Length: 291
View 1 (cartoon, rainbow, N blue to C red):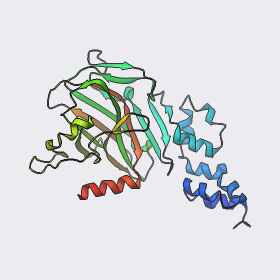
View 2: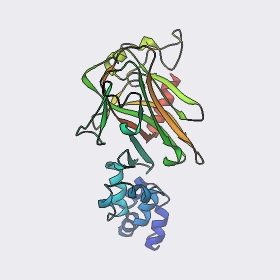
View 3: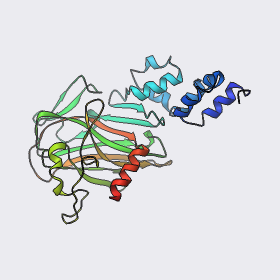
View 4: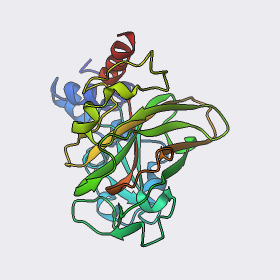
């Protein structure tokens, strides 16, 4: 193999994965040159990466980077695009595109009414502004993204990324209804809790639109309760969507609590995030539904 030209080795490596390329770079000196070449790492970047970079004001420092440096920078440091309304990053293992839609780019009912919602800046947020719930009895949050923006042939999971203030209330025992689906098609709908500790005590409410006779008590790790992220925000899973190779349409995500009429406050929204679902997550989902 080492008798082959570097370009030939690089071409072969480009048909593998980012993880494989990193492993192959330790085989020999010529493999290292080939595995770290721009030709290899550009093949792991999305076809429209240049367009996405051009829509970001924070990408100028990345243009002089090698393609490998660019790849890992996009994995670890999401960039703001679309005038700061969205963030874009890459899944480290696969290079699939990931997005977060900022609170400002969501439809939040009464979001521009200061009595109900306020807009503020906090240092730990990815975006210039987040939305903080002052008090409402009708909670309705919706977001959309075109399927063409996502990587084709990829299973995605949507999350609401948020915090709860110290004085939050109204989410202790009341679940919210979340859904994901194409605007023109069927949606995947389920019921989740935004406050973990007290929501766990209320498993008898029943989930997934089942009747009370069929309802089972949910477990802490089954996806119906929030998890704390590495960035110390909370995330709650809204649902999955498989983006087909030829998919062309608008995806809508929603978070609703319209039925009970109870007042709620203290919810801080950073955005709605789309990330690739890992094989471990897929296996966990299958196991949970099997049980």
